[in-house]
Image 1 (cartoon, rainbow, N blue to C red):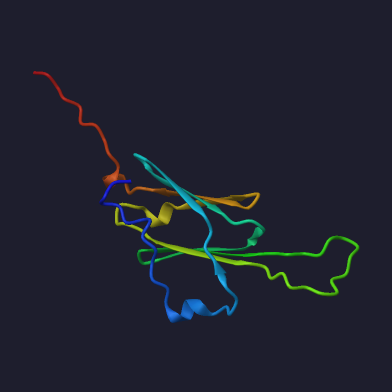
Image 2: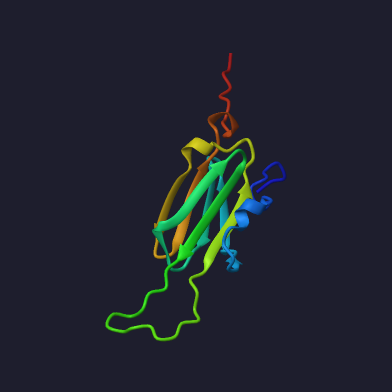
Length: 131
């Protein structure tokens, strides 16, 4: 991505974002760019659609998800030290991205976000007429 984009700069978290006392895990993320926008791929193992929250407020994109750790069928937990991880990652979106058109899909613990550019920010070729 070029210098004018501001997507990969982590946003500052406020004190109200610290509502869960367990440690927060930062998910690994890959970001791919094309002329129409970007694709963000985040690794969220064990996170279901119901436990995933994606919010955009002002210029901050926030991804939060909680993994579920369940006991195997037919077994009863008698001692547990494993806590379900809480994933959280935030990004600052530049003005060239269309917040209203962000799409998301979750498949086997991998979140894919498509964040398109606003039409005015997409590159276009100007046709030249001879004459």
